[in-house]
Image 1 (tube, each protein chain N blue to C red):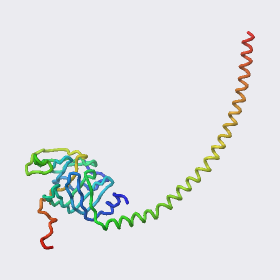
Image 2: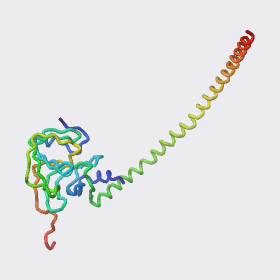
Image 3: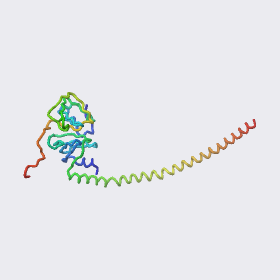
Image 4: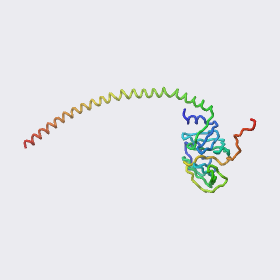
Length: 99
Length: 148
């Protein structure tokens, strides 16, 4: 249940917090992190998957589906980030006109 | 210069990471490991098309999903300093160690083998002599049978 050495990011601080997980193949899931191991297998509670656009599977839509309690296999986990503070924003790279 | 030592040197610097799926992540590198798993802080995620953006306080990215990373130019100066100081220190020590080990093993091992062979030859001679004796006995037995 607990983390081990050799991890770049200590997931202990995310336990019982909301996390967003991207999986290989494009699925995107959020849920409450209940547990993890050194292989990055994750236990997510009340997990919600973001449904992707049927025409463009790379794009997520606002549609979701409830998955409940899930185990994410570590080898399929591409990215982990806290949901707290994660927001969609306007293009931050645009330079102001005339600059 | 090794890619991972450059990456390690880039800790604390801003960088861009593009994943195999085309998404890019701009953030400050906090930590990385030998699998190129990375931990970024103050991240801006850009979709593959470059039309949607997300801000996230931090994120963990699995190394094997990375396509490439862009690191600031100044990082290369720091990594070269480190690699230079390493090469300055290592070769003399390693060279001496290898040289001594080789010189000790070579002369020390060969005479020992030579001595061993000498003893073996002596034993073989002794056995040869005894074989000769047995042969002689066999011959006498054969002679006996022949007689019988």
